[in-house]
Image (tube, rainbow, N blue to C red; front, top):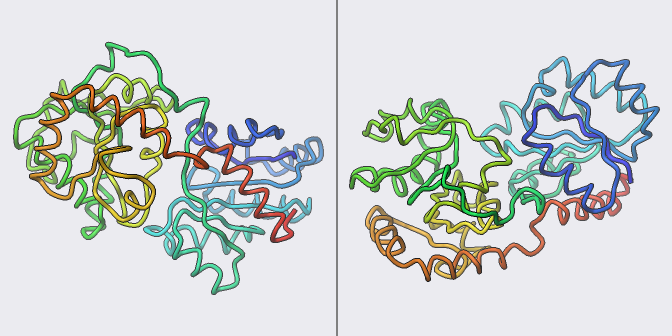
Length: 325
């Protein structure tokens, strides 16, 4: 099949588009939302369906309306993957869906799928995944060497505006106890220099590495003894949960129902429920490399059906089931 993606930036190009290519389909990506150019692209490429996802430049209101007009005129089914649920369902996802009027919506949040269906939006659940091409074990790289690392943006504005967000709990459980015990964490990602008030700690400049190119993240995962994985919701997994394990990293994350539903602690990864757990686990596994390597090796085995190739197959199967394509 031929799939046209409306997609800006580089990161998301390595997710579903790669999955469709790996599954043997033809993919075109357009980040130019000029109406005439899109119409010409649709005529030339003749896609079986089109897709957009998330929250990017292509999702400003003007561009949403351009996408809607183009897909309606061409009669090409349009699919939206809603990856901002549930935090931004009513402030962003739902208004977008109502403007663009996609033929089908996939959401990373199961109970939001139920909500969409109740208001007449054809929808199904689909979580994040990993790319075989990007998220794979690589050789140790001294430039990314770390005892304890974290790859994530800090999102201080989200923490400020959502004081009950589960990310607060994950930070308090996984990060703060290590900092309080003077254990170095190497931070890759934006805005950790703005987190003093949330961490009650000033992160030394040499611990901060800033933005990390998406394709280089597995170098950190494969060159760190322990990778911390924040969770945003008790019943959902972050995309980096899949990516760290697929890369062969040793993951310490929050003990949540979502983590326990898919993985076994102490077999595929390790989980912490408290400040005391985190400190004890980190001290133990920093001293036991054989056990770290064994668990990291098993972590990949729990990812059956989670690749973006699998997601591509699932999307097509679902769209055929609902007679969208």
